[in-house]
Length: 128
Image 1 (tube, one colour):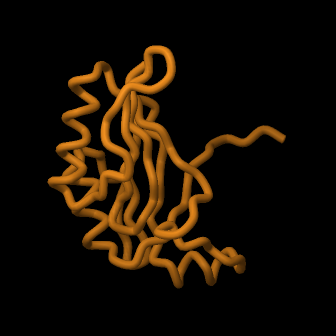
Image 2: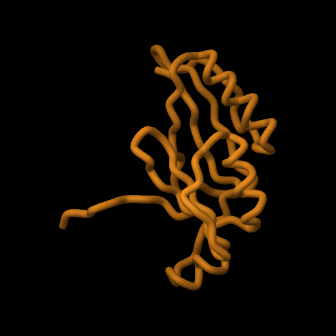
């Protein structure tokens, strides 16, 4: 099989809050409907759709984990340098996100942190 595209689908409880959070972080909108808000991530415009929980669950007919309790995936966002990582951390807090682990050095040549959006979805931001 040859997939033409790949994107991610997350569940959220409040589309307005999610739209504001990712807009405040500077991500470009990929559109909004009554069921989802969508954003482009990174240089190659990876798409993440944020669906209202009941809408996505009804369509996929599987249990969706609560991101406040468990993680199915953690996306990593790359930063150009350590100062950029620190700036991301400030922007995340200002936008209403939660810093899960503060910026720090780890491993050989890595510096970064983990944050959660208002629905608990986790992201790494790091420089290597």
